[in-house]
Image (cartoon, rainbow, N blue to C red; front, top):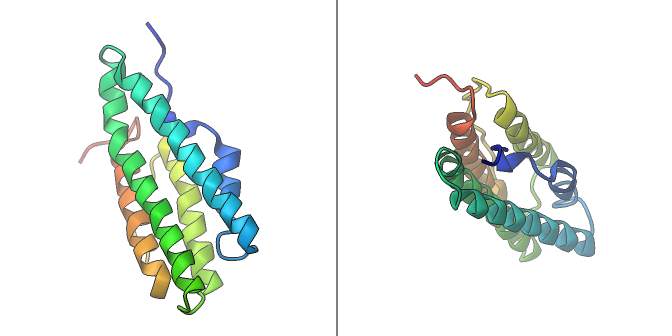
Amino acid sequence: MRRWTRPCTTRRSRSTASSRPTFTGGPAERRRARRRTYRTLTELQTQLQRRLAEPPPISTRAAAWWPVIVALERTSDSVTEAVIATRGGQPEPDLDQVAVLRRAIRQLEDDVRTPADDDAELLADGVLAPIAREVDTARRLVRATAPGRRRR
């Protein structure tokens, strides 16, 4: 029987680095970052689908992570939509708000290993508001799914 490994722990350096240039880099750098992010999510999805084909308890644990991956994809889509909106004339987002969202996304990875009890809602304005909502959803899902989490 195969040993269960958490699918959200793969490719940390690539996914973390890819969020950096989203609102601060040049067009080519942003495009590469988005492609890298979507490629990483696709690899994660593929690994999870392989785990779903395993017998229980591996498949049961893998199925619990599926909503997290969907939330991460929606977050990536929201970032892409925000970049397109700013390119189309919407005001550039406040870089302080971008930094807060970036930290929250990076914190998700730590939450997979050690769930936090920080349930504070992320707030953002303009093109960042949908991203904040998606990150909040992903945070709740990760914290509910992560091993060792006490159910209330």
